[in-house]
Length: 94
Image (cartoon, one colour):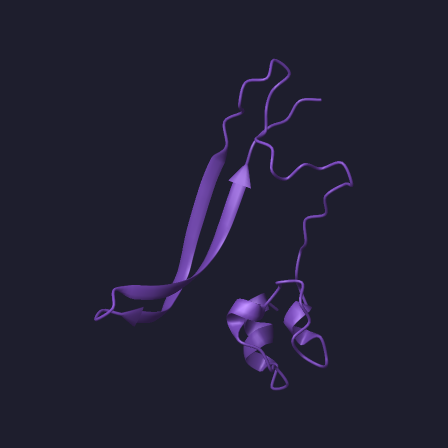
């Protein structure tokens, strides 16, 4: 069963899609955090630093954005919301 199928079939779902897998429990049954794959960082991970190679040069970062849907489009105020997956990838050689 896919994640989307489980969300559709889950009649107890009490969350909006943007709250899914955000590490905050929004439902009493915790169903908004089911089927989530979390990336865990070590204590020494410095999220504010740019990935660099052994010589100090910035690494190439590959970016992929997959837009899933535009649930809201406001053409009068030129605003929209989007559901998307963001993937950043780089190679660190230790």
